[in-house]
Image 1 (cartoon, rainbow, N blue to C red):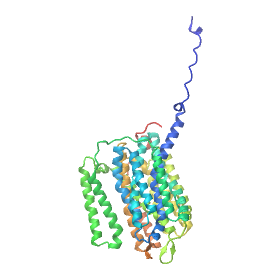
Image 2 (image 1 turned 120 degrees about the vertical axis):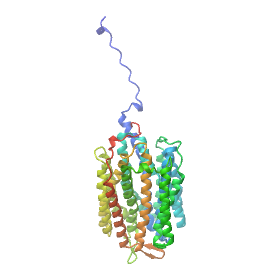
Image 3 (image 1 turned 60 degrees about the vertical axis):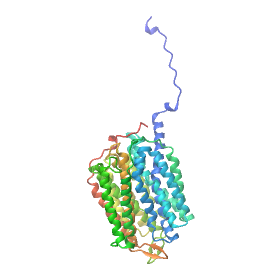
Image 4 (image 1 turned 90 degrees about the vertical axis):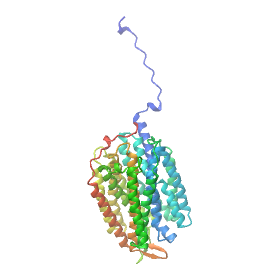
Length: 496
């Protein structure tokens, strides 16, 4: 009998169709979207809260008749900044998801205290507690590198960064409506709701690997860094009132110097430092961290001026405010916020082809132009809209480039430290520049019925100072050496 006379074998039974048998692309896309969403909103909660609370600043100033409204932003910024290195280390020890959930929960308590507070001192206390979710931004990017594979990590990181454009588009619209209908407490309730949503989304995030289970917490480094930052911010913010050459201000600046020097000396000798000084001295790391921190910290603090300008009342000889509603402010700057997202999305799409330095340098230059435009063009709807568009183009390119610069500069093992250090430095710059900008505003301000109002000259000078700081960042950026493109980056994720 030949083989040709054998009967044909029966066809094998098809295996049952299970979810795992579906095309890999559909499963991967769904999982990618869920994890990305679980990272985007918690990361941008800081931005949404910043926009919403920024729109309440003018109302809070008048409702509580205070001349110290700068501390409404500074209390949050200081606490968030000082907790960043702590959260980064705890994220390595206990997992980033757990640390982010704890921080968001404490922050929620602070948000509730702010919205229910009957006095300005309790408002400040609540803002300080809200600072506990500040470090989430540092943990999100390193978590993305942990859970996404190389082919997705670049796009995911850029989308997380550039999603700030969408948040700063809808957050002003929602906050403006709430402000117009419910007063300054309306946007504060929006922040509470946003924090609750962030906690729910974080529950969907897979836990990240623990890499430093035996690491010890650097208490001396944390104390010294906190002391240096707090002393510097207090000295700057009180300089106008106490006198720049007064003993109290000079004493705070001296304390800042001593604490900063001691911090560097202590960190160089500790086996497990809060910030590895030797690592941070590498040219690529030093230039990327310095340039990005200068630009982002300045942009975050100067963004408050738009809403402060537009929502403050116009009082001849007293206040240069435009007296707009919250909704009008949001609509006028809307085009600029859309461009922030589109610019970041473009950087993410081209991340495998572009050297991240190119969009970063272009975005930095355009950001300088946008700040100069704001300095001289902010007197009516068309001028503010034009300035917002120029500024939005620059910030969009920058927002999409920052995570790629860091990804391409450090190793996988250094990612957590790099993100923590960068956002720590952003926080320090943000705190200091916020204090400085309010000092500039107050220099030509007028106090009326216990409330401090600002002049057109003050707004102009603050924007020009911001432009000078971003220009310095641009110069430093020219020294950034080659960074890896996304297809060259090693990540810890599994195929999605």
